[in-house]
Structure formats: structure tokens, C-alpha cells
Length: 256
Length: 241
Image (tube, rainbow over the protein chains, first blue to last red):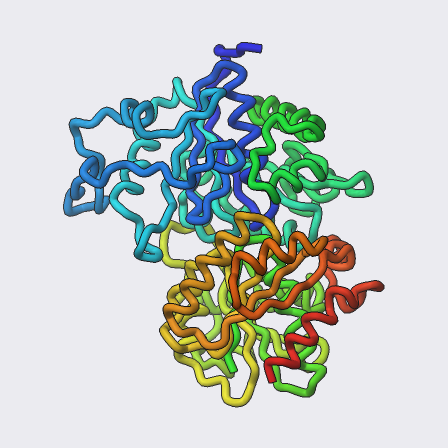
């Protein structure tokens, strides 16, 4: 079970809105934590869902504004105060799940729409300075193209595009596949087909997107009910097939 | 008349927008369906097909790359980057994020600017917005005649919907209506109507016809048994007159 020798993974989940990124990201993070790895789960969606999926029931894990000071004239605008140790911030300010996933959120818009608060800049600084050898990062980006194409998932070496087996999902995924062209883009991009029914063909979907298939996850009534009740799907009866599928996805991602 | 359709990702904004546009078209109204998502796929739901959707997008890309003279007028935009959809609806795509760049993707033209500044004459313009509130929240005050908030019966979608309603009210964005989509039973309908108080609500049942059309990338109008989905939105279209 414990696989501490496994190289830590930095993965970002992207895809169309409603495709199931948060659910899969939460399962993914928990499975890594159960393997004995240290895991940070990052939510940059201003309408966060990852916290709920993890069973945390807070959608905000801010850093105090005073931890951030103005950056140099050459940019960036804000930097973490030089005397602050980023790891201590993770321990102190992230929200921890029972399995030891460290959750934080850095896309929340409070008050002013569009602008990031200083505390949110601080979290992005923490991510940059997190030692790669010690921490897994599992990021959940908002649906659509805006954040991913603007480089919000730069921390990830692997981008997993979650799509339902629909034409809109495939069209979105094809656009996201262009992240490979970015200098700062992920080292690997692959597709996760979610909510598939027995009549769907995940391989055919991945072929349409022209990317490798990293995993396929079955449609699941229990997860849909959990969503209705604002409950975490983690460990719920009826989700076993989904969990097995995400376990396989973790193994595949670790081998990418 | 300018209408914005907003809500959480995946709630069915595009499916609702498309049926609303074609229903208004069938009533004989001049309708512009404006895809305001940087990841546009309204064309599929309107029934213009994947190939045609892709073709308009490619034209848009040529402008961004400077191969075509840049045109900012809304009628130019619709001429050049639009296409005819069924039932007399003219589809226009405002912009699409084409390439990964850590910069502004809007090329000077954004849905919020277009809807704030352009005069669309007597056309009914239906703006199918990007998920969340980012783009919608940048539309100028009192620039819209109708705001339609699409909500599915999940707490997270309701949460986004309530934030959207707050924003719409405080920025005076015209008549404010809720479409409760993918509703499976009266308990789910009640969950939404309780949350939104006395805001006007149109309940649209969960529809396998929409799921089927989405898998094929076609319009729900081509599906059998789609009337459960279409009829309430047709009623909504009539009430907008």
C-alpha cells in the first residue's frame, strides 16, 4: 500500500464545466494520501467544488494578507514575505482531511470580482516554492479554457483533461490539448473520459481528441445523489467502480 | 432586446439558449444567438453541426492572426463570423481562446463590451455566457433587458445561481428569470424554488433527449421525445415578447 518511493506527481485537472473534474480530483488526491504520500489539493475555481468533494465543507482557505508584500518593480506585483517559510504556511493554513490531504484554495473572489486578493497571490507563491521531491500536487481548475490557457495550471507536469463522452466535451478537450504548445505547458497531457455508459467507447473519444487515454470512469448514480446532498462521494456505497477506475488512473498518471 | 444566459458550468446554459433562440425564431422574431463562451459550442446545440462550428471558429482565428482586416461592428462581426442556424437564427461567436498564452485572450472584443456597447436594433440577442460570473459581471450596469440564470438541482449550482441573482439585481440587469434545469421530481423543483424566493421560475425536466443530442453533437430538436425539454422553454420564449 505505502509507496513512498514513488516520485511525487504534479497534476492539474482541466475540462469542460460539469465534466466531473472536482470529483475525480478529490478521489485522486485521497488515493495518493492513502499511499502514504504528502498531498496538496489546490482549488483555483472561484466557485469551488473540490472542498465539497473532499468532504471539507469550507470553500475558502485563505492566507492572511499581511504575509504578502509588494514585489519588485519588474514584477510580480505581489510576493510572499521573504522571512516566511512556505511549508509552515501549508501546515498552518491548509484544511486537512482525515486522510491527510492538505486543501487550499486560491481563486476565490471576495468582494471585488475578477481581482485576486493578496492572500490568493500568496498561495500561488507557496505552490511555486513547494519542494517537488516531497509533495504531490493535485489541482482542480475551473471549467473551460480561461484559467488553463492563461497559465493557472503551470505548476502541473501532467494535465489530465476530463471529458464526458459528448461532442462539446471533445471540442473543449481539443482546445485544451493545445496546452502542449505552451513553453510553460505540462510535460504530458492525457484524457480521462468520465460518466461513460456501457455503450460509450472511451478509446474512440480519446482518438477524436488525438491524445492518449489515461483512464475512463463509469457513470455513477451514487455520485449524482451525493452531489444533490452536498456530500462527499469519497467512500460512499455504490462508488466502488469509480474508485477502482480512479485508482487505475493514479497508477497510469504516475507512469506518464 | 438583450438577454444573458448565465450559471454554473454544466447546468445546460447552452442547451437552454439554443432552444430559446430557435423558439423565438419560430415565433418570427429576428434572433441573434451570441456565443459568449471562450470555449464556444452553441453551434452544436443550435444544430449547425460540428464542421460548420469549426469553420466559423477558423475564420475568427484568421482575424486574430491578422490575415483579415479587424472589424469591430456587430453587424460586420455577424457577417464575417456568423452563420445561419435553423429557424432563422443568426449565430455569432464572439471570441475563442485559441492558444495558451499568459495574457488577455480577448483581442479587444469581449462579450461584455459587445453587449454593453453595441446597438442590435430590433433583434433579440441571446448571449450564452461562459460558466461562472467573470464575464457577466463585467457587463455595464443596466445594459441587459433580461438575465436568465440556469440552475440545476445541486447545492453548488444553486450557490452559483444565488450569487448570479444577487449580481443581476444589484447591477439592474433587467428582468431576472430562473430556469430550473434537469429537474427529476417535485422535491428537486422545490429545492430550487425555495432557494430563489419569489424570482420567476421555469421548470425544465431532466431529458434523455438532451443527453442523446449532446453525445451526437446535434440539436435536441432532432431528437424524438424532446418535447418535455422544449415545451417549457417555448413558453418562456413566448413570455419574453
